Image 1 (tube, rainbow, N blue to C red):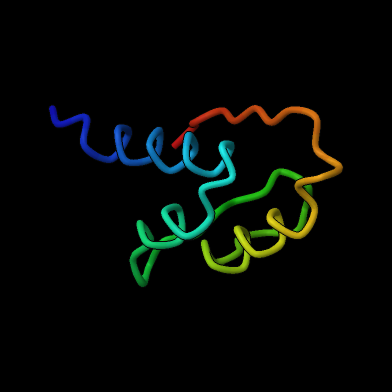
Image 2 (cartoon, rainbow, N blue to C red):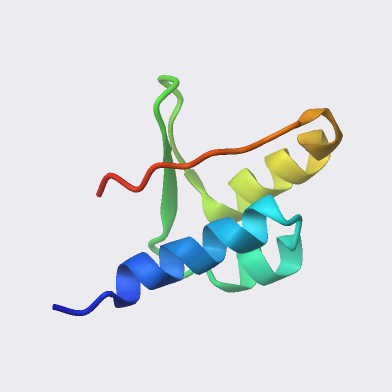
Length: 68
């Protein structure tokens, strides 16, 4: 079984957590979405990265679990 999707997710999250916004956005495809467990539902990668980039100064750490 290919690990390609999981590897792509890990690369995206690494770029995202390092503030490599352009690189993270460049990885998206038309059907890529970020699911939130806060009741807000899915957002596009572009919208998610834009929102996080605007708030990054207030973030002390980020942690992600891959569940799909």
